[in-house]
Image (cartoon, rainbow, N blue to C red; front, top):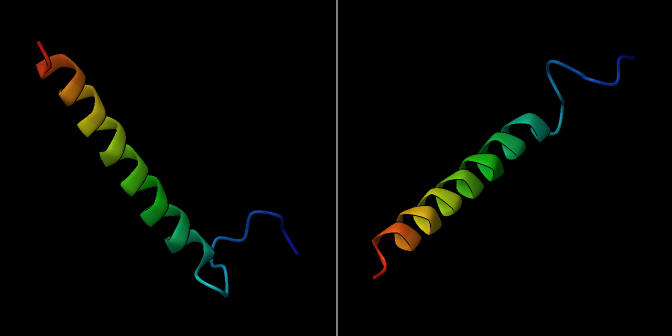
Length: 38
């Protein structure tokens, strides 16, 4: 059984992608807010 399963049974990869996208959006909003602040 490989450590990196291409098809995880419990939707672990989908969960990781969703969490990563939310984190990326949060970081992008924070950068935009920092640049836009006077």
